[in-house]
Image 1 (spheres, rainbow, N blue to C red):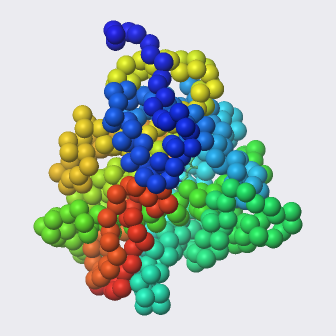
Image 2: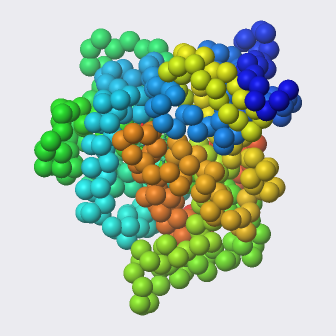
Image 3: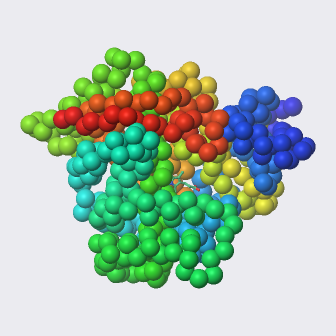
Length: 437
Ligand code: HEM
């Protein structure tokens, strides 16, 4: 076959479709990866509730970044949109004008908030919430809930201008919004969870000032409040807390003692206030911590497959293994787990390497929906909070290096658990957690 030839995408799953779903349930993303490795093409099809074409290298993934080739649908979100946001579609699932309006408003709110809250302020929130972690109440089994609380307070402070400390309300909302089928004709159950969170949001500085922050928006203020709720409750809190778990687990199981010490040393420089530099300057120069976080979001990307898009038209998808015919209405998805483990890009790709070139990770890392080097705009679906989230994780890790911790659970991540995504196979149990200055 010549390199000009156009191939049809091969379905590599079992003819018995349920077997694919069971494989995913039992073996998580490693099921997909093993299938991929058993054949030559990096673009392949598999039945996953609907026949899906996976783009699993950085060449083919680019067709999903912008709206020229694909359009968004709620996909699986259609089941839980009603619970989450009373049926309102967040910008992530929108296209064209609708997407541009909602995304522009989110970006303006974020810009406004970043003028009000500095990284140093966010650092203070992280520090005080980590100091407040008390694992004695739950005998160490409540540690992940404590981290969720840290993540929630960061999200609230960053986006809403005030910590709401309502982790349990958020958790009720999050769990109920992931239920596929439910029935709530009146304000009970999931609808009550949603309304409780919405009412708390209405009392925050950001929501109370929305008419000043977005004077020209064509959205209703209620609509933008739902969008902010989606940002805090869905886009930020759970994802950030999973990444915090990954930071702790990989700090523990993937580094040598010398590497751990070098991160502690860099963290102590970051927190040394009697220097000539600002906190922000010191944070940007914390290169070892930066490398560690970039490796975490490469190896432990919370969504191992995604972004999704539906083909707008017939087109030819180029990939590392050839050219493939995509048909209008095909469901496409990036296979992030494989893109982040491409051995031609990352030497020894399964290893967390503190010596890895940060520029290479940034070029190929799609943890935030498209490569880190791509700017988020109203014309693409890149996460608008990518940079600030990396900084938040850097500050979190720096604080964590100061803590005296006794982890009693196994921190291994085999990527085989469909429930735990990518962090640890088992919930993290921490029987001692003391923040030391
Ligand atoms: C570590 C935390 C976060 C991670 C890993 C993350 C990751 C992502 C990813 C992968 C996407 C693309 C989804 C898709 O294409 O279907 C996305 C989109 C988005 N994220 Fe984030 N996100 C994080 C935090 C946040 C925060 C704090 C906000 C608050 C403003 C936010 C707002 C958004 C929005 C509005 C979109 C939709 C963008 C669009 O469709 O144009 N994210 N994020």
